[in-house]
Length: 143
Image (tube, rainbow, N blue to C red; front, side):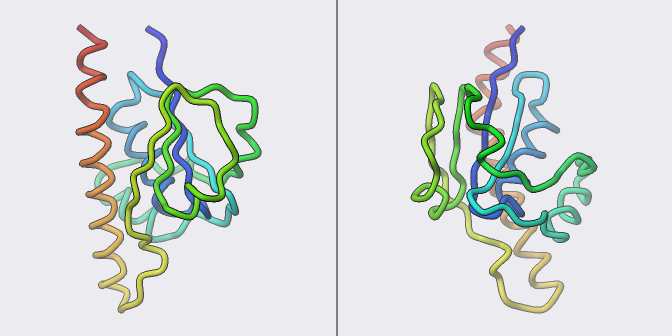
């Protein structure tokens, strides 16, 4: 079975798109090849690593990537997960182009525990959305 290719895009490729890539690989990796990139890539946020590892997701392969690395690739799904990437993103050919905005945990102000809790909330929202949106299709394709 050929896996469908999915590209998650955000501005810095440091939190939301990284979470989406890692979550999809972890839970639906038998059905999808997940990638992520940013229009202005930075570094993976340490809180992103922490909250993914809390739920048993391997983060060893995560690093910030530029959308330029994927020019010429063909994807089944191209998904922007923040509003600025939706506006700034170059066109990527995808059979399905989607936009699902999640709050930016990197810009959250508060104590360390409050920041971690916000990252956890965004992680859980992304996980729920991915499993609801792509889990059924994965099950359908395996039968």
